[in-house]
Length: 367
Image (cartoon, rainbow, N blue to C red; front, top):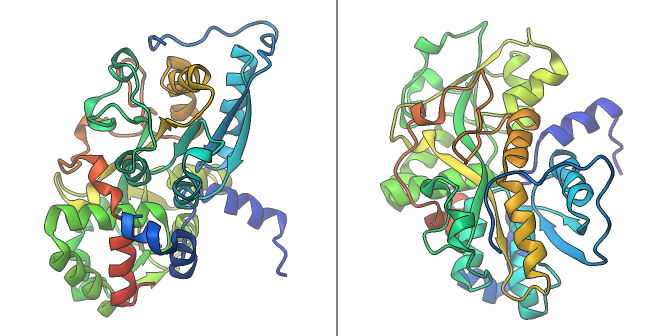
């Protein structure tokens, strides 16, 4: 077995919670029946920090987290310290955990699903796995970033971008649409991560917005234009761009900040935002849903409230460089305001058809 050195391990952890699944693992994990299916009270005021940890309640909340332990583990520890609600957390890929919940059904030990992608949240909502949340909880979150049926809520937002090497290009040099990347001038210059869940969510959005035929044409055009594949790792794309191996890459905005934290502020990378309405400008969310079959509903609701409290939202902006989903919490200072990022108008619940996207990526040869 190959061993990672310390630097590689640190970089791998920066690849975030977006753990991609390759074709084989997806198809094996879902199983035939799952593939057919598609892949109280509160306010947003933070739970007040105590000088000492809160007295344990004796209850143990079970969280299935598709977000990486290095990113959200400290936040979950703060939740326990401030509420006394201890948590047993299962960390794995978002798609893997969604499939597990579907397979476990009402016997699932999970009380909360904390996923990095709205598609998985939408899938579990469609399959009836989530309990409805109170409006006074949901209502503090921008309507774009929560379930219209009150079944899940976004906890942080991220934008799709083109990361580029600043020693090769300026922002003005770059195309304004993702479709333009199939032009001959960009041949062999673009990296993507087709096994990555966020990339697959973007392709799903492309399908919803433009149709399957248009998505197929774009994917085939990118492959014909010698796009460079990085498997499931957005971090490797950003490193390759900064190291001059390729000049452009399709990633989420926050990878740049994670890589610069490791490589230094002088690392020659910047984010390019595509034009308003373009599929490549998609704003997606991480989010949470409360399992209808869970046995700790009140504790689960308390956890969700904590994620969208001022304290939870500030954690995401300061620790992961993501956008808050609640008004009144400042975005990271060097990000464009989320209102200026021209995400296409799309119901994020419509990103549930991961399996259709995987099939398309497989058919064109991207996976």
